[in-house]
Length: 330
Image (cartoon, rainbow, N blue to C red):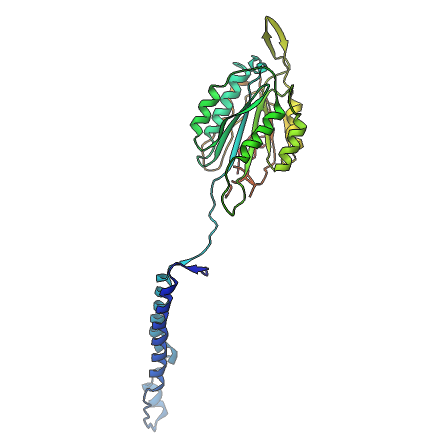
């Protein structure tokens, strides 16, 4: 690699020394006395004179001079720009804490299953990733700003309380605001980002999911959606049973309209399968057989942030939850 600079350029003046030695060597070679001997027998001359090429006697001197040049260059401390892959990305986990998440059509109930999935998802992310938490019911709020302290995010997930209404659109807008708060590095593109939204899928207040999808698409931020519940879900409010069926198509449309990835409907009878990252332990996205009645809507093709891919890239790389295996990959 050719250096693009030196930390101690003044030391390069020492290259004068090998140049002077080279000049002295050439001068000495030209002043060597010529000796002539007379031979009457050419066969005898051929036997006495070595057949080695004349250039070979200059090899030791050439190696010495090259060594001096290399040592002097190294002494000047050359520098160069090298691209080094780094794990850097930001993931926002948006968790629905509306009353409908209390339904027990998913064992033991929707909110407990969603919390478990979110915690295990965060546990499986690389330590260098920034992770934030957004909760939403009637309003959306940043519970934990993006941080590399993943334990604080996991603790906050367990402390969330249920409330009325569901503002899915506001959750996406709030997640985008949280992503903008992450400081970038001077002269570099923003780190890759992704929103992972866990909900039962019915927007009741605030801006619509379609508006949120357009905003996420404009920002180049993929949105992965995971639906919890069945069509038979009910909750008890003021002594009355209220039907709260999962709105899986709504979550699929949200992810699909973002345009960075597509969503696929799927019934996860054995729970959401494992999220996987190369070189890291699997993080289970759900509780396996205990959640056999859960439905999941996973998101597809990887987006590129420069986590274009989230989750690497070299430099984040992109996060992607594949529809068939629900694997998180850079």
